[in-house]
Image (cartoon, rainbow, N blue to C red; front, top):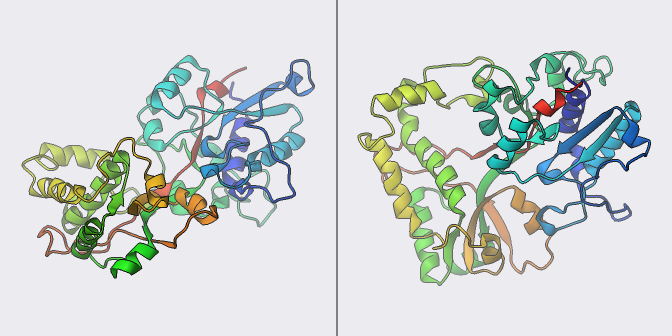
Length: 381
């Protein structure tokens, strides 16, 4: 039997992102996680013992090692336990690697609520490891007053409707609750740019010219991890080169997800196009994508796997850092950073650089960041 408490808790935690900010100066710090209830204690005797692995929002941790330990989820849990006196909530850490995830889920020992990206969830939905949340989200929230968001459908409490509703799995069901959002961009050293007479580039040609100038001046032009380069880099250049022919290849539309997934190719479209020679060495756009990335590679840090790119940026050995909004916390709150910094999105690739590009505005890599699921551990009597 599914523990009904898991569903409201997962949705409450996802809707309560305001509680995640570090505490003010007069608030006490908290220990890492929350720990299990002490043996023999009143909380240990409660019939519902829920475990949650919240990922980056684990109480007691300090994101980017700046600020004070987080305690927002502890406050949410305390309020939940006041409402449901038969429930105790324990926060735990998790490795965040797929090998651990699969092992725990296969054994039925994973935390009841867990941070997992939809890409990992979708490939395993047929295994019964995750609880579909649609029937709960379609109902009114038991915590909403008449007329408030959520009083008709629990869905309505989420601020960004397109991204929240756009995460349905290939089987059409919703397994993940989007907790927050993330964006990527180029963080740059304004002082270095000013000294060299550079500015955020208008197009790809100016972007490469600026990086050549930075290299001549002795800087690593762009700092990036290999995972980000091969993920974000491929996605963005792919969009630039295939966007002009998108109307002819993106034919499948899903009304429930289209607001968020407009312009995305569905898995069955990709498979069909691949069988027709797209995204292979026979595809000139696919070859062009890798030519552009190879040409750009000369301006990156040599060690893409283990280099501490944030350290190289802060010590001003690198002039630009390709990362995401999670770095803002570190850069904005660190009093020892000795330079001014800014952010810009990658510029478009004009037809003068590639005949396959239409020069349209570069899309932004981002979307849902922390995403929570209810796991098969909730299926207990």
